[in-house]
Image (cartoon, rainbow, N blue to C red; front, side, top):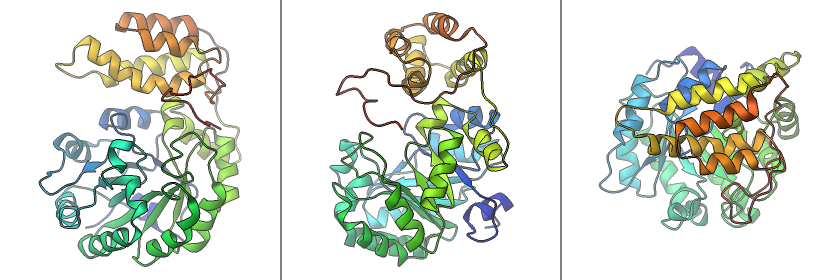
Length: 352
């Protein structure tokens, strides 16, 4: 398959502009509508799909496959798979290569208990021999780029060096390292020192992932880790300008800062982007709330915006909330604020 020039630039280690910027796959958030919306604000160099669930009788999810085919951004797409059945993973990789994908990615990092308890995603980090066998089979079957997104271990980074040795054996084209263990979830500080270890050890490009919340911090992470680029998820949902800001900072330019009404316009665009034919208002509002969970951390520190957003039931309520907090021209850094959160809150954890 002839890949777009930007795809080759993303995966080629030498001579490529830095940093390479990728949007992290976030299940039920980073769909095609999200890609198109973020692209309007500068967007990443490459998109990764929400994961394709793979098991013995699975077929590629048609909506996610359609996103690959219909992607209008001109940016390459990598199809991510999650599962542990080797024949099924090989079969699915071959099916996905019939789509206009730049690469195939294996998820070794999903921290959701419903996933890792089935020995998929981050759960595979408990069985490195199986990871080794999966990658060997995929390397034979995949003729586009082959990559892995991983955490640094399941409940401890003690075997991280062993994991790197497994990854190094399989001629991977890219590895993304989220610097937490699976059981850490998002609650602990990110181990950028372990991302740096991966960047030193592996011959392929390495992307740093985890808590990249601003252009300034992005450059710090790149300098600290020696990574070839960054994969950003929650930070990009909260601040859709972050990819453009990083590029500006990399050029030595002061990053552009949105103001309140810019963020208000983004949230209205989000409302429009997340709607779809046949989606009733209640379901639409619930879908928007998945994004607002991340965005709310950057709006104000008291937690009132986030709490009100979570209680909203109608589009009118959301639009009123946006006007109340964002109808102004004050600068909005959109960096995570110390919003009070319950211990069991889905957002509880370290955000900086």
